[in-house]
Image (cartoon, rainbow, N blue to C red; front, side, top):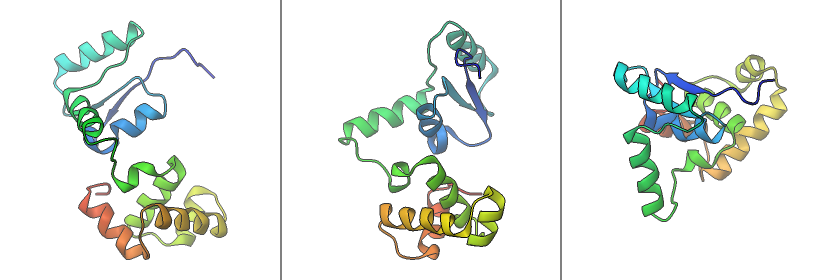
Length: 139
């Protein structure tokens, strides 16, 4: 509705977990809530002036990705909906619970699950859960 609104995400999740995904979705910056007040002010001013804000953590992650030839973790190739379904599976929810929570059919959730398994080269929900825990994508 308001395409010119500037967006800074302030999240409880560390930047290395979700910052790049939110920036790809159109956010102008991302900070974790444990960020110092001074950095928050710098980020807000930069974004208000029409620029983007990247913390040192995000810059280092992006630099490492470029240095490694663009290699990314398997979950980074998922669409937003696939990532959402993946996280819900990773937290132990059943397909029918996920369908209800997201207002989708069980068939649609199963399709997303199958795409997730294929993209991540996994075969079971248990493997997805383990990956999500090991990569701290769920609490």
